[in-house]
Image 1 (cartoon, rainbow, N blue to C red):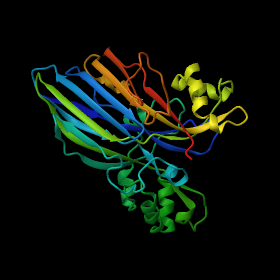
Image 2 (cartoon, rainbow, N blue to C red):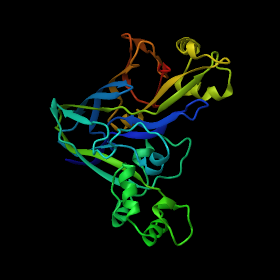
Image 3 (cartoon, one colour):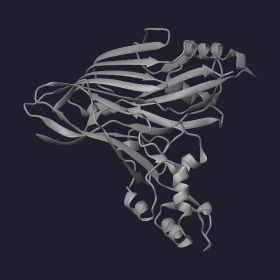
Image 4 (tube, rainbow, N blue to C red):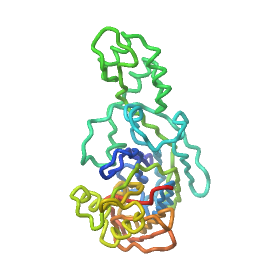
Amino acid sequence: MRFAGVLTVGLGLTWAPVAQANDGFGGLTATGLTFGQTDAIAMEEEDLVISRDEVRVDYVFRNLTGQDVTGEVIFPLPPISLSLLLNSEFNLPDDSSHSDLVNFRAVVDGADVAVSIDRIAVLEPPWEEDRPQAEQYDTPGPDVTAALQRYGMPMTPDVDAVLVALYALNAVQLRNMVNDGLLESFNDGPDLSAEDVMPLWSIVARYHWTQTFPAGEVLRISHSYDNRPPGGIFVWQDPPKAEWLSGLRAQYCIDAATSRGIAKQLAASEYDGMVTGLSWHISYVLRTANSWAGPIGRFRLTVDKGDAGHILSLCANGVKKTGPTTFEVEWRDYTPTSDLEILIVAPLEG
């Protein structure tokens, strides 16, 4: 049967909660596979490996029905805001014109899958502090691709290419784009130029392929991609008495032992009771797994902090150290009720 759902993998756009510092950079959160809401396909196993530089996921799915189930697999990057790219640092490739920004690879039953990539432009909703991460790719905003193409705008997060296209327009065309809600104008006069406007759209890149789950059979799907989390300067105090540290403590479950570990590893930077280092803030949306039939039969998470001298903190029970830099947790019949928030802290380089 043809299932009217869409299998989705995704990343989301986020900023590092850098403590009392402006020296931070934005980046991407991550999530796993969904297939709409279906009782036809069960996720028997999920083996998730997260490091600062890469995400790898191996799944074992089973079609519980007597008929093939087919749907479109989609891996969307989050909406990438042109205005933020123009004004801020982001953890994206130096060549943002490349079609594949995260070196995405998909494998089904041991064979590489040919993945297509297309892009659309959206107008994101106003920022909300408590907006769920998953909404960044589930409901990214109205599609304005056709409107932008009428003005010759390229579907790319390459800000240089976008600026070239804007400079090619005359004042009337730019004013029309402002009136269409595509640009913000800093000049109300008739002599509007590209120097007076800011793009308001964001680019969503979508990787996709058609997948069939054979009737009654197991299917193994793996995917991997470059992890590009936000991060920046990290400031800490042990014990963390400052009120502005309470959010970090709660978000990453930083207990007393971890707090002492941070202070010890960053001791060389101590000044006036505070220590300073570098941090990466990795978010992974687990709740998309709830779209499959029943709980995840076996879920295993491995986090690699990258260096024995780095400090790791996350909110998870039963975490075991399995190597100099790796930590692991495994759950059976697992139904995610929250998402992963992972903090990696390192001494300042040099």
